[in-house]
Length: 224
Ligand code: GRF
Image 1 (tube, rainbow, N blue to C red):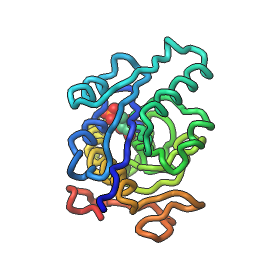
Image 2 (cartoon, protein in one colour):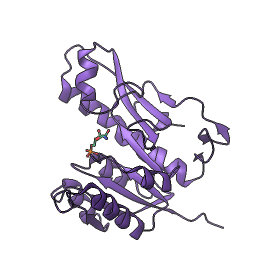
Image 3 (cartoon, rainbow, N blue to C red):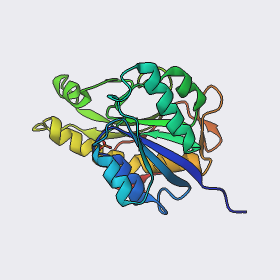
Image 4 (cartoon, helix red, strand yellow):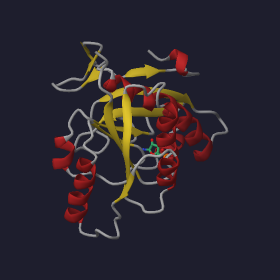
């Protein structure tokens, strides 16, 4: 019997280029997952337009409409639950979700963070990598826990830092990698290859003690 497609909600706050990569990967790299809704905490986020153009339902939970943190948290949880998702995917969502919601979706909530975690949790990751003179930088996909950028990292793509890089150039190359790896990692959950139900995530039935790292990611063909 054909496997049921998992329902995925995407949370965004801005441009939504990762969302676009997922939309473009539907039926292909993202074959085992259906994008059933997009939620933004910023009403004018460009990602909302991307979703609408792709025919995906959207919802907005505006920070200004819900200045009280608890009200905001309750409304976000309500909106997520209303889509009845199997997976919640954070893609440039710039708010920390409350612990109760994160716990409710444990093992079913992913984030992508623009650094090689555990380096550079939080903001301005490209600037910090450049200031530290790093020769390698990159991006990480991880399961979400209540700890900011702290859940188990499942996959990373490395990016070499070039001598003339500035924040914008480095960020653009990191994002190119994000657009390749994020849909693939999400699909691993859809196909059952990746799970996190116990202490350590499992990949292809084995404990994933360390993230899968692509050092020279030139295209989708180099992915497992
Ligand atoms: C990405 O670089 C991601 O790593 C970070 O936020 C950025 C979102 O970009 N969490 P976009 O909105 O997907 O273009």
